[in-house]
Image (cartoon, rainbow, N blue to C red; front, side):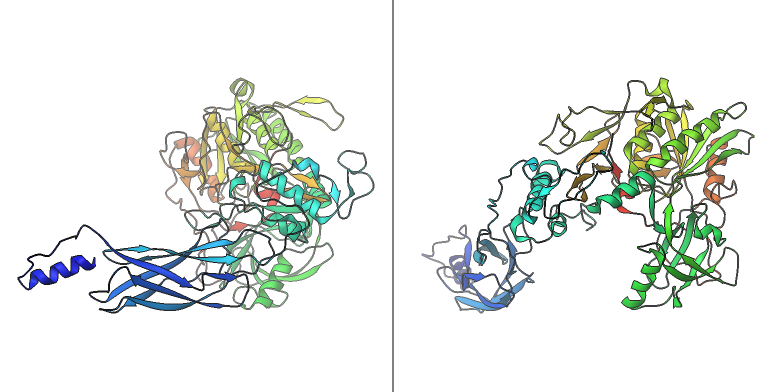
Length: 636
């Protein structure tokens, strides 16, 4: 670049005789750094970066933009440094700038890390420099070697606090033996490396440097983000195994029997009752769907700020134990005044299937309806009873509406059984309900069961508590209407996808579903049940790419994310199962006419409504449920 600049200057003076024009050779700036290494520490270190012109000086003022980036998979080796400029004055060979670098003082014995210092300047080639982050940790006693893994079975059941007594799942003794924390961590490390869907995106960390297996498990997932900036893996959680058994077997958890829909999380907040379970404190207090919360324990629910108020509100909304009493002020639907109710938490047994019955469409056709809120074990018998009820109707039902607007997921086998009971034997015989795709280590074998990978069928029978096999009833319908929204997730979406995979017509009335095609098996070790994403599911046609949900779309065709139906707001002014409720009314009309009602409108999501009490009484919010009920879980 220097020779090129001189040639241009001489040419401008009209005398370039004898000048060699080597303009094809680019100018080069060389970056260097002093010191060349820093040791892990939370103390900032001054590092000087120099930009120097190779073999000459700058003919004009030259600005070099400099950036720092780590080379390792772990992006937390140093605190982020914003890009900066080094300006080389005309006629000078170099210039420098000083920056502060903080190398993260972690507790991992690891290789030294490299930070690349790169630069750009118009018309110039900038050669990078490197800064080494020197590890300050002594090797641990765990014997950990990065990238080397023993089978998880080597460490299974080796517990720092082994359980005694009888395992309620098996009727036999617990398999626990005396072990160490590092054994539990090693089990997590090997199990994750073998079964996690994105195992090659986990940063391998020394299991001997973490004192709590729960903390170590939280690191056993990808750090990647989606295009929208959300975590790629948002579905990573644990339960105490006894709690997990109680939840999964019976649907029991502390609460009032009211499920909240959170429409606006920040002031002005808005939360309403989405639905209630029968024979609970909520129903005994006469609370109904749509009632808005005005205050909680004397705190202004709508407008109060400050973390202390937020914590107090959440503690009241979601009690951790039975026997907690909290005072709520509600505004019922259509009322200008409020009322105060004291609610005492109990262990609530969820009623996952409600409002089973029939409705008559505007054209006079008999249509079945059921509200299905959770894919839990107790839903199995309730769904079977519902189908038998429909089959007992004089003349049968001509269509079925399944209301899953608040069903965030659960057991996949429940979804499969429901799919069979809707479609029937003729449509499902030999067909795939869902095919599970695991990580690339397991293209042909299920890493959890050890069995060859084979599609999950539409289950047409169940095993009763007495050990007998009972054939499931069936409706043998060629289409089904489903009421959906952003709380329709996971196993509920699988019902939609799998029925469409065998050409059962599915019509959606409501808002787009949440988009969660992933799932897992619960893994119990030393009294903790771990849940990590292990597979994605596709239907009989190979489709499973609905990460943004299924979208009700008038006139939609094809087998992908757009599904025939109507966008209709959640109508909190009426009870679920009321034929005048917005989504149910739209479904009954659509089954007659194939068109969306003129009044259909999409809900606002989280945007706040007009000031109460004149706000409209409809709108989708987010229903918070236990993590295991927001995913698909395989256990059959």
